[in-house]
Structure formats: structure tokens, C-alpha cells
Length: 141
Image 1 (cartoon, rainbow, N blue to C red):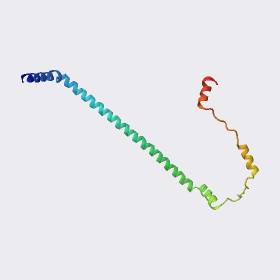
Image 2 (image 1 turned 180 degrees about the vertical axis):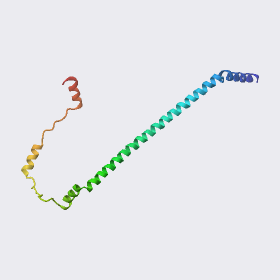
Image 3 (image 1 turned 120 degrees about the vertical axis):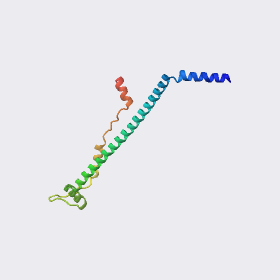
Image 4 (image 1 turned 90 degrees about the vertical axis):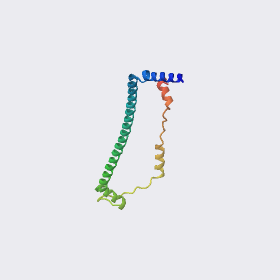
């Protein structure tokens, strides 16, 4: 039993003089404060970044909504204009201005269709592949 008390007294002495000295306690508290400060700084930066992302998203949404509102206002102005009324009357009611005449053109003949097919079939130029472009650039091939 005396050896146990002896070991306990030695342990108490070591704890008191080596581990729980004033310098060690101050050092341990300083380490804890640094850890706490680092954790709180990182969490604040993380929260600030998330909030800035939300603000950026909301400002983009606001700009988009303002653009949509401006577009709708311009459309409303166009629909209230005389130009739209005239075009709508021409399209829906077959109206025309004074002095205008409607000219109906006949369908294209078969020879005109054949001529447009022959002139429109131009040879297509195939672009060289990426590899051949690199080979030509590097080696002048």
C-alpha cells in the first residue's frame, strides 16, 4: 500500500510542478484561445461567403426581372402604337393603304425550280481535322 501512496505522491508532484505549472497553464490557455479564434474566423468567413453568394444570386435575379419588366413595357408600348394597329389590320382584316395594290405572283415553274436546285448545290468545303491542323502547324505538312 505504501508503494501506491508513494506513486500517487510522485504523480501529484509531477502534475503540480511539471505539467500544471503557471507557464504550462498559460501556454495551454493560449493554445485554446488560438484554436477558438481560428475556428470562429473560419466559420465567419464561410458564412460571409455564403451570404455574398446569396446576394449575387439575388442581384442577378433582380437584374433579370428588371429586364423582363422593361421588355414587357416596350411590348405594351408597341401594342399601343399606330404601327402595330396598322400591321394587325393588314394581317387580320386584309386592309390596305390608299394607292396600294396587291399583286399575286404565280407559282414557280418546274424549270425555275430545277435551275435554283442546280445553282444552290455548291461544293461543300470540309474543314481539316484538328490533328491535321496541328501537324500542318508543327511540321509544315
